[in-house]
Picture: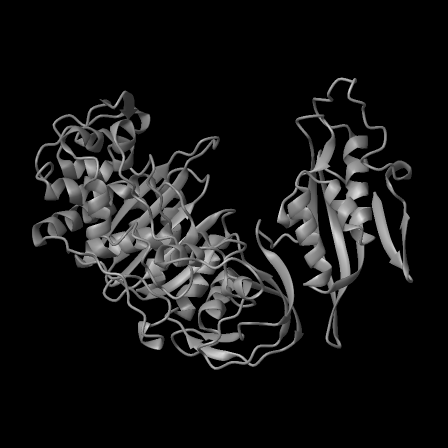
Length: 551
């Protein structure tokens, strides 16, 4: 155990690992061989002790020297006192786990006569430097505070952005106490609308994200033109960690439904890593968003391979090109080879003499891979962008989003993209929008805050689905919901419904990510359960519960 405490005007250290040997003690000379192999318990303990002792004692140079990135460490640790105004720091290490050492932080934030106590938990990891084997703290900003991403900073002062009071569509207040998933959403709403909603900022300790407006105001680099500004908006929003004096919030009304939001929260809470979104296809209004992990908004900002749910877009492309038709015979062999890769179906099944509808409903991979040779490298990209509004980085929903990515690819990667693997990346918001577009025939950009609030322009697709393609696509989705891989989850929700399941293989995962996207009436929803398995069994019940709650 380490316990490093502050007393009076000086700094004292007690109960330090084995007497408190520093990270530099007993360093090898140049003539000695470079240390390698796993770190010993003594190396981990002494390195952690040296770093924490120096940090607490205000010796930034020495603390930074105990890390493998002295420049970044010195910058953030200097700002900890001079920009965040955190004083009287006490650091207490807890039981290590291998090379990781968790520790507790206590301190006081003092700014212009305002004082508040600060307490939180963090963790450091010790690694061996390649050139000489010396153990050092593996530097990341999260060592200083777990909410920090590399490049972020901690700042205390009059917040540049006033707080907001976010309301649901019925006028009720949205809080994290009631809806735990909404933390990042509320942070995003504050960042976007705080200055426009008429509030007054208070004094706060905040995480300022790299590239944010507040970071620019405190000396950060400015973003350039539209693409860079959009890239900056895709980051996590700035976050308040501690209020020293409360501001006066402005009011922002959202499109969220309190009943559906509650249902979404309940559904994802039962899984370790699940996310879900529900929207209204006819307008694009977002009715619910939830994540079982609350530190990152995977539902809006996730970038994951969508697996076979991507076949909704691919099917529309094949129908448009005359390469498939709902009730015409379509090949579904056990295997299909393209670009040097051999693709197969789940459990190597095949459908002899089956229709495209049968292949879609059973999620036959080879039925899609077999058509790759007849498609240009950019066909799928164009279909996703022009019809489904994806991958152009122009959505403006009111908070940060990732708008999907369908890059132009060739050979085997092109074939993999047709079934939602390769370079294709989506999140539940994207896939809820995809099935909503299939339902209505025209892309309606999802939004959380009405565009009339700030006169922003919503993204549009350059073309709609043809009436014939839309009719066939809806038939495919309806058949999948009634008689295909989505039937069990969608039981009792018909007849105005449609669905598609998906399972996305991910390197180093024992189980695939399970996806499910569906519509019922004027409701559309999508969900993903990471490392869950087949989408119909994992994400399907989540999406179906949302659709039932909204009926």
